[in-house]
Length: 145
Image (cartoon, rainbow, N blue to C red; front, side):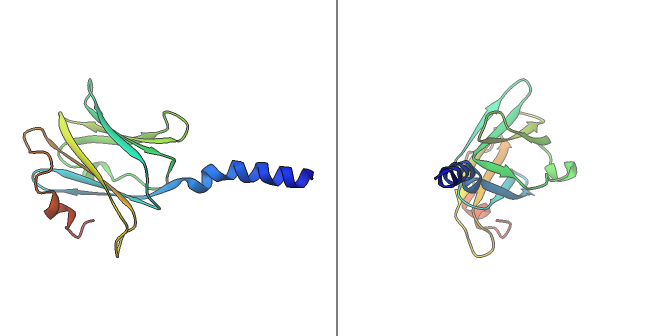
């Protein structure tokens, strides 16, 4: 009986780690009007994206996610991003912070698995004078995704 109880407890402890989504890769792509970050994931994820000021930042929170990707190097960050970092502000939340050179807008969406890539979180950042969602279809259909 003790083994059964111990086995059940160990199984319950393992469930959160089994449910975690791995961030497998972070790809970055630039156009004249926006920068796109694509987070390649091992499965679907629950997320939120918001901005902070003083200094300007975009924050991406992924619930029950594990960081297994390397950051793009500083030269790949493009014209509007200063730095990218990650941490865990609360248990069960993986946070990516984009330090910005200026105030930017963001747009984000999930893409289901395709032929080449699995689940993806896409975050577009662009200067405030660009319309939100502009040219979304043409960029979503690009081979970079």
